[in-house]
Image 1 (cartoon, helix red, strand yellow):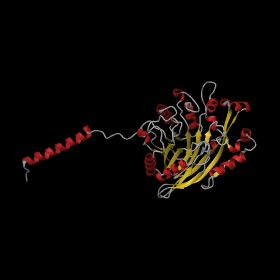
Image 2 (cartoon, helix red, strand yellow):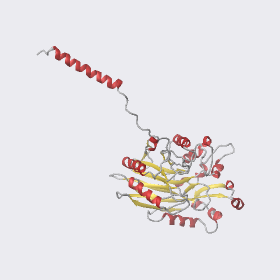
Image 3 (tube, one colour):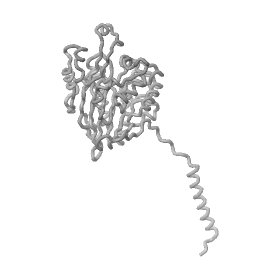
Image 4 (cartoon, helix red, strand yellow):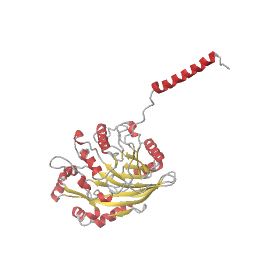
Amino acid sequence: MKKPVWKAWGVMGLLLAGVGVVVWFVLIKPEAPAAKPVSAGNKTVKNSGPSGVMTFAAMGDMLAHDSVVAQAKAADGRYDFKPYFTAIKPLYEKADAVYCNAEGLTTGKEFGITGYPAFNAPKEFARDLVAGAGCNVIGLANNHINDKGQAAIDADIAVWEELRPLAVAGANRMPEEQMTVRYFTKNGVKVAFLAFADYSNNTNLTPYGVNIYHKDELVRKLVGEASANADAVVVSAHWGTEDSSTVNDDQTMAAQLFADSGADVVIGTGPHVIQEAKYITSSDGRKTLVWYSIGNMLSSQLQVNELTGVVVGFTLRKQPQSGVRVERPTAQITYMSYDWSTGDKAAGRLSARSNLRLRSLSQSGTAVRDMFGQAYSIGEREAYVKSVLGTETGVEVRP
């Protein structure tokens, strides 16, 4: 039967209207809102070991004291910090990820090269922490990162981003960046890395410049999001009482907050000396490995305990159902030595410290005794570290 003319025109009208909608959708429809910026991104790197297993190493405070910078400066004005790490590189060079706390800015001449109390190292310091020390997981949340204000933080992050490590976290250029979790994947294990500090020395701090762990909601949101999207969550915490091997109440409470929010490992720095390692139980029954402080690594501080550090290690093993198991905690003891004459020491001439050397404790010879007297030795230092770290985690301590 022949269709009425009005019905045919009606069908044609509907078809034309449909075409118009398609044209509008394709050509005129506004773009969707842009995604939030991800400053460090989700990085997948070439596998270097068995699938489902990632080895992790961690070193403590990297402090660009005046004498550290002076020794690295050549006659032509260039800087080379890589020789500091030559002797200790075998301790961690096979690890898939190497964490370091970059304590202070590395923006170079733009903000003035200065040591304590307002740290700003040459840009080569950052370059050589990556190229020389092998650091590829960088913590920027510490009390010195804001020493020269937000503009210097912005410049510092730009320096690190050019070096393309696996992850840089803890300091931020904008609010959106603060809310971005950094992830990286290796050997099929996806790790989220976050960094938090107790406070900033410079109290003129933007709300987003440094991640402060006393902001409980920030910790819960970031660590919780990380836990939901990664196999393992590693948190760096800069905290504690300086020069004290005793964990304080603030550290204990913050560690529990990290664990309850989803952290698998907490790596502590800040006291400049070693503190205990232990497992704590989260609110949902998981075990979180907490290194309360791994001490200094590169520095020219004055006390024997400040010059005694550890390169800690652990293995993240992916589980069939979910998450990871943290295995094989280790601690390789290091010692930072230098020459300082009796006269210069008595006069407090800090700039006179020279021949700075970073070595494993077993390679340090008589350096400990020569600097601090007959009561100190390689054996005494090994006993000290074992006593402080404790036995709860079963950590294997090596001199």
